[in-house]
Amino acid sequence: MSRSGSAGSADPPPSPPPPPPAPAAPAAGSRPCPTPGADREPILDLLRGFALLGILLVNIELMRGPALFDALAGVLPEPAADADRLTGFLVGWLASGKFISSFAILFGVGAGLLAAKARSRGWSAQRLLARRYTLLAVFGLAHMLLLFPGDVLFAYAVTGFVLLLFVEVQPRTALWWSGGIVALLTLATTALVLLAAALEDLMPDAPVEDPFTGAMGGFFDGRRAATISAYTEGGLTDVLSARAFEALLVQSGTLVTVPWLLALFLLGFAATRSGLATDPGNHRRLLRRLAGVGLLVGLPANLVLGVIGPVGAATGTTGQLERTWVEIAATPAQLLGAPVLAVGYLAGLSLLALRVGAWRPLTAVGRMALTAYLSQSLVTTIVFIGFGTYGAWTATSALLVVAGTWALLLVACPLWLRWFRFGPVEWVWRCWTYRAWQPLRR
Image (cartoon, rainbow, N blue to C red; front, top):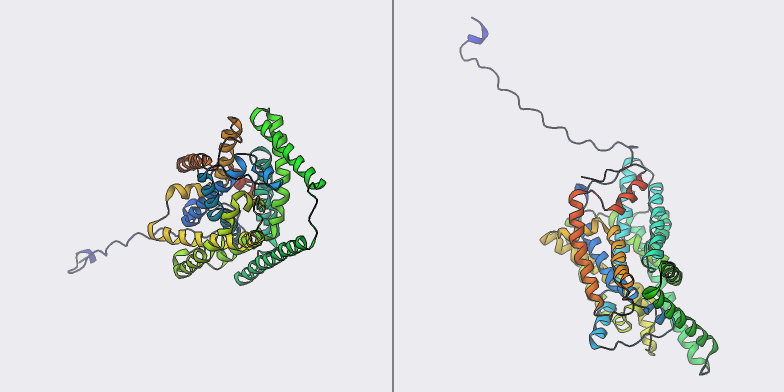
């Protein structure tokens, strides 16, 4: 009898199909490529979007009128309406220095992520980041000359090249450097303010008509009038000339902040290497501590920035205020208090996102942060210069432009990412960084 007909025999059950092979990790030395969108941490993109939109609250003060020249002349006009006083106080207290600090910390996070990916795949992190910062500097130069003289991209690029010296440091070392730089800057700058105040008390009263002060005031008054004329009545050449002069004034002060920016970059870099930025869900307790300390300490520490207003906080000018305590308290508030409150904002928003999820429109803005940053300046340039309304907006009415720009980005960015993998400027940036043509469409 054959085996197939033997009693109790049966065909063996078919074996289950083998599981699909797991995707192989990129081999060491493989060609550098961007991180797929599915592998991005949505909370980080949410935080970038939050910081990006918040920056416009402060930038709008230098975009809407000639406040820069008023500050450089040492005079900040008093707001005519109570609403404008309240707006200036709230923006100075809650926004000035906080969102640029947040964005700088997140910039350090991005550098840490890119360096970690390069290290795991056998790429040169320094070379990859250097290419990235080279094009960022070009974007910054174009931005400050064409759209907004208060650009931060160029200063970020310069600071990024300094950050290359710290790519291999451990998280604890990066934290020590970050805290040490901020502490040293705060102590040194505060000491200089105290010394200047003491010397001013010892010196005899200056003549009523100081020739140098009068000459500088007249110079900036002339530039103020020329800038208003260029932005409201001039042609393209006039506008570009005025932009270039403003950029020279603003950027000469911005580049002085490179050590402070480096400290914040290192803070974000340490957060990445310690796992806080890459896995916030497993660091809830630390996030609660950071949010509590950041808000409880940062909110009162920044009150003085509300007193001097957003322009005074950005330029270090107290305007009509003659109280020395304001000048003294503003220095540690700008250098230390603002980053502390920024950390409170970031930690608190991370906890909220862990509880209720990341809001997709704001996450989309964060994924297109560079495009959104430039778009904000483009929109405000059209409103204030294209329509000839420069100098005609108050601090409160300009919030309508802020809200409209926010709404535009919160709608446009998610729509763009339905069909494309990156924002248009991010796409150019990635093609340059990775030296390869990146597919743009999904």
